Image (cartoon, rainbow, N blue to C red; front, side, top):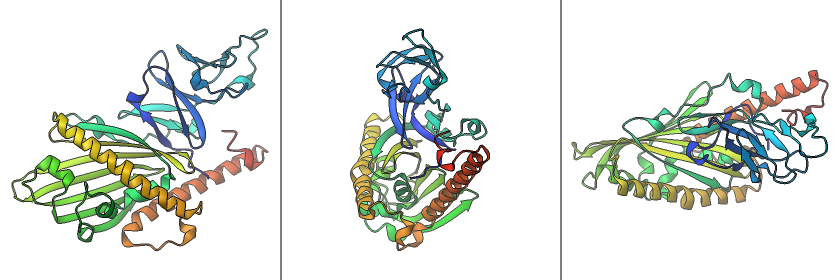
Length: 359
């Protein structure tokens, strides 16, 4: 499968990268993450060029990491700075690839493409994750399915009635007023839900005395698969029952063609110090993703048997519009990137097939 490479992907929550190494695979490439002496994150290919041992099993020393197999030492730019064998010769073939990384909004982002292009493109903003006066819970889930299928799931929230009793009551799908919006390469799925029964989720914030709400749930997507979800419920029975808002981050990073790193976070502006509420929210949201969404998406992938979704001519419903728009934008971006890579390889006199390996 071809991935969009010149883009920022979520690699970890900042809090995940403390002491030691963190080994993850992104876009079918094994990567080792660690912090240097200055506390800044480092990302290197997790494979020693000598005998391909995982560097993530090695030892960190300041700004370097030592291969656990034969002791070659690499700096944070991937250059071999110590060879304990023979005369200590360090040919350029001993280097490993380094990846641009940066931290923003408590997310560690990684750039898997041309490093020279990373500085010109800022990562998406999720400033609410560190917003004063808000409380945030974070989670991470390994999903055994293709990341675009997970995107489809998050862009169409009408499935909540049928998969997520904690999030949406029975009958709620019929009351959704849906539309898709597009601004250049960004897509929004707008779900207005006027005069609905309160949901178990918002009962935690507004209380069970609120029986009916005006609500909305809007998903904002940008390539390759970074989404912001804005949800809100305003009490209408009783009218003075209050208003609750939750802002969510859903960041999908392909591990392989059939597996995804799913980073999620939810920020709220009510009941900030209520630890019992936070535990219930964490359990309910994690259970919805882990026990309800993931098994269904995996079942869908199983039925598809490796075939691209649009090649199967799926029956499309109105609420599929935003997800289809996102798929088309992503496909165009990937095609443009592949074309540019092929032109560059041709100009350098290299076969186009080797362009990706040369990154």
